[in-house]
Length: 367
Length: 151
Image 1 (cartoon, one colour):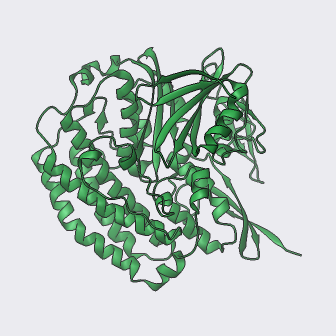
Image 2 (tube, one colour; image 1 turned 180 degrees about the horizontal axis):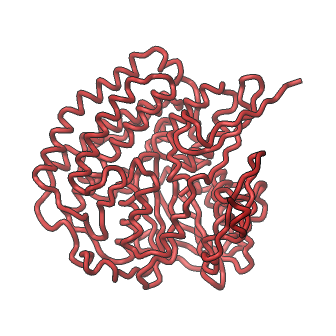
Image 3 (cartoon, helix red, strand yellow; image 1 turned 180 degrees about the vertical axis):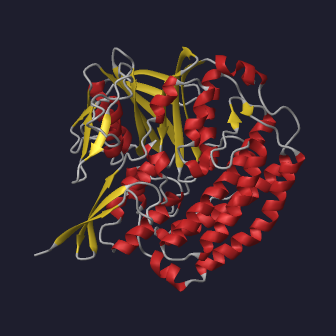
């Protein structure tokens, strides 16, 4: 006769980043079922967006996936720019693309570092955060904000790139290439890291489709789906980069995909820095004195490839200065909904590794 | 055979088709057999009726489009039998928008406490009435309009 134990993890637990509550049903040390409780960081950003002006809502999106704020802003603005008819000029698009890719690097560094931390590897965490700090210096130079940047505006960006910012980015990229490989070697040369990650949290492609999983999790299952390639936005169709896939389907595959995508992000940034042109950095229709009077009409749904996967924003306007309805498609919520399925039969310690590998950010899950 | 009421494009250029509530399951089964998967759904409160938009994606042909349907009595058939992603998404729309999905096995609130009164994304939701949440020693959440009970 099996003997079941209920183990409570969270909402505040050092090895679960963010505030989730997991109730594990255990048979001795084997997980039989996981019950997930959400909503500890729920602010209802969708309702808040209905109560505020189009231009003011950017800050709520900053605070969704707070480690990948640029992508969140971009997706909201792509929808808003469609329904207000204010298109950003070419230079603004390049600036956005560089910033988005830099933010992707920063978000992946957090994910990588904290995965190591969960498994008891303290060293890579400090190396990752040291590099992330350099990216945040660049963000501070451009926008004034470190993490919640509030840098993009309707029809462009708030401040232009100066020579100093471009030089800073070039210098950062030059030294980051070597540091990334050093960090990667720290992980990959550790026998324990291999043993802890290989063969756990297996996501079959059919399961991923059914649960709406996207991002590194689906690419580690062998499906080359990336919004940047499949539905190009900004100027992703004008630069060369590859979509890495893995057939390992496990936590280790997801880690390898994340690292390889960082190398591809570096390629995108380098090409963008060469191609960036002179010109206006915002559309005069969206300038600061007109920002409070911007009206939107119609509905638009746009999606971007964020750190966790396909992030989408639906905006509906009714010809007033405030949106009628805003809805965000959260990739982290889908990745998390798969957790009870893939963690069946795992040990408790492996469960922590699976959560670290999926890397859900609670600000975006709860919204 | 289901009937497509209207077929238009949104501002991004994505196809949006409208089907009747009674045809929804049939239409979705057809799209599933054609290789489409549900990626997300969201509800709109149109004051006199509620509408729900389902976003579908085909990974082979890379086609992304939306199916719209509306209801006057807050009830819609659940898609959990067809797509697993609907399980949490329908709970979210039930929680925040108050749409009841018939046939969902586990239709509970997902973000707010179970005792919460009202659905915040409704246009007639009263934001001035503050609700206080407290927790007893067992870990159960209780909601009250009284400030003293909620502290």
